[in-house]
Image (cartoon, rainbow, N blue to C red; front, side, top):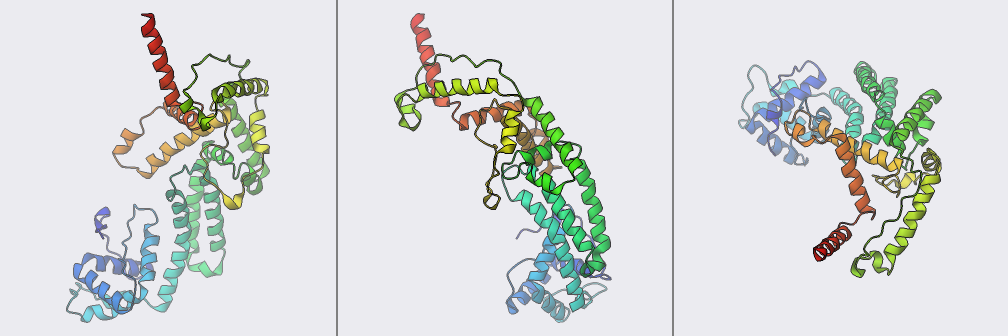
Length: 378
């Protein structure tokens, strides 16, 4: 395993408290190649897993939890190392202290276990965002609220009395970030646009006035993206696609599609502005026990407001998540340089292609036929 110590400056921890003792021990073992080798031997002797002790990297998500997780998995090896290291010729002596000073009592292991339980909650929350390739902005509100509620329960439990002050400090930090969510509509809108949840979560968990405020924001965003067509678009003559390109191999498929598109255009022209939104919210939820990843709420033409909102907001969310996750990396500025309008146009184009409204092959055939016709005229 590559050494990760270069990711953070070297820190000397005190052994006066339990957490400091564990952190100091891990640091000392990782500093010395001989100590590392001897520690692996100790783990083999007690039939422990072949894992490395992980160092706490302050700038890395869930790093302290990962350090505790590996320390617990290697607990027998840690105890054996502390017992034998000072008397072993294979391990260099420490200056001014001994490995015996890092001995963890049963009570101290219990404290570390409780600390591990507390930190597991934000670690799981962070993993729920990083373990998927789909946009995850819609998760921000329920994940933060669940984490907040879980920590509040821990802070009120006598089991975690020794950590109540630290948990409350963590809750203050969560509230700070939760207030940041109120500064934009994107989190609530993305949650509503997921057909697995729509408004069910917010309506069940929020106070009525908070829910009503969220709905006002949703309608405002919908109105921004809604484009009313006063009359159906005239059907434009087109060159029929070759039989080999007809979808599903169906003869006359393009002819039928033109008729359907005319009907869709007529229906769109006669819909009241917010009917699309109301119909979507009134439709049954997807089976929450069998949730599927969602990039578009349902199969609607890309000119409709809900899909335009979904593509624009979730597209921006992907860019935002990548920028956030790679903060401090110089390449971020080069990658995230598209204007929002350009990004939205690209998302609409991609959606139209995926849903069959646009076909690159058919368009190429169409262009080639026109070019041939133009050359004949010349």
